[in-house]
Picture 1 (cartoon, rainbow, N blue to C red):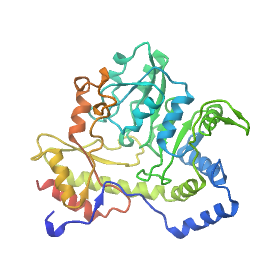
Picture 2 (cartoon, rainbow, N blue to C red):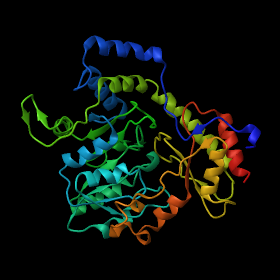
Picture 3 (tube, helix red, strand yellow):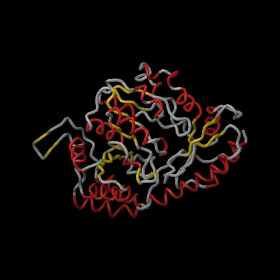
Picture 4 (cartoon, rainbow, N blue to C red):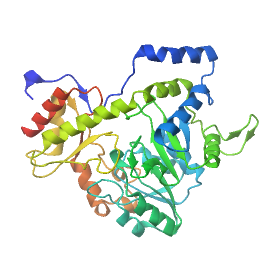
Length: 373
């Protein structure tokens, strides 16, 4: 990528925005009804539409995924210690601290970069009450192995499924696994409501409790039964979600094309390993991630900087590890010698641009640049 071919700013992801004229009727209905929040009609419609699209029984919408994680832990009355991954966005472990819970980090699988079930049992103590895995980049965790461990030790499982909208395994949605699964609808996600999130609930009773907790613990107008939070999604975001849902299949199909093009073009580039593809899953192609190993002529960080200098803005996602941040690194489980795979992945990972409006010519430029170093 020469200076003369320097591209306009290309970021790792850009939100899909449906045509403005299609959103205006939703906006007019909100103005006409004067219902802006508190479980309005678009909120209720979106919950139902998402249940049907995702193939799950109950969903509780939230203002964002982080508040949803905080509330999921509270809904299951999780205390003590929770086993989780150091290779994630900080919202995963921050939600534990917000609930006064101690994160216990264990290492990840080198192929999927998800929590390694083989490392979980050794981290269980009498204070352990739950496991919080992450479906990293939308690739499903080893849910069967994790559930067997949880059942053996009477632990809850809460999945951070922020990346996993629409992902399925052989039996259906991966969101059905665990006691709860938490989604993010942030602007950078495959499906977004600008800001938003949701908890996938296994039954109506659990959804009722979660709906109470996200509305300050209110039951009716005058009774408060729990120290809840304000986590409600407003009508504007819900309306945008209903419109986005009309386009999500074509967005995912376009991401799949871009993913395949990257893989073909990067095949044979020494020192570059693309993370495993979808395999047997129905994937959402949320991210396109590569690992830059020692066989590549320059370091991951040098490649990152050179791409940025040429108008391409990838992300070292996730770097640093959560366990390296000041509020976590004093924990015994955060020591790097306990996390060799995660430490290595954080030093090698690079997420390349992938979003529906990304032109294939840009993919060609990026891959040529990577191959030319």
